[in-house]
Image (tube, rainbow, N blue to C red; front, top):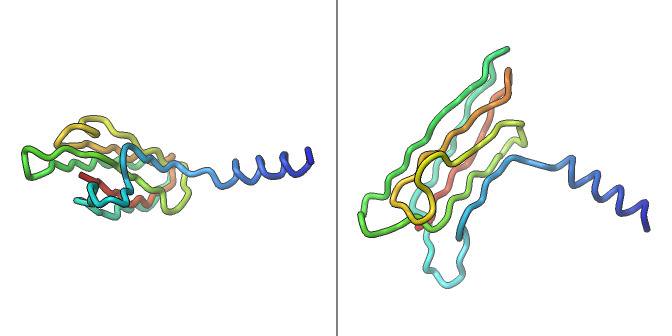
Length: 112
């Protein structure tokens, strides 16, 4: 039994990715809907870190962001973070940062 647990923990560590999920990204009642969907990709340059900032502002002033999903599609060592706004705000600023010499590929989805 102990052997299976150790193997399972090893598999979980191997498939770790740097995706970010905040708030309600899925709702069966239909109260949350996707308002933004974008694929962001950057290729690696040797010895260089790639950085990109994505800014989204909801056009209707009374609606607020209820969920953000930043999915790492390549299981890279890149980092995604929300630097401004986000849940409860009408805007969000997302920063993507790669490891030195590698690229990234993310799918960004915003729900309101």
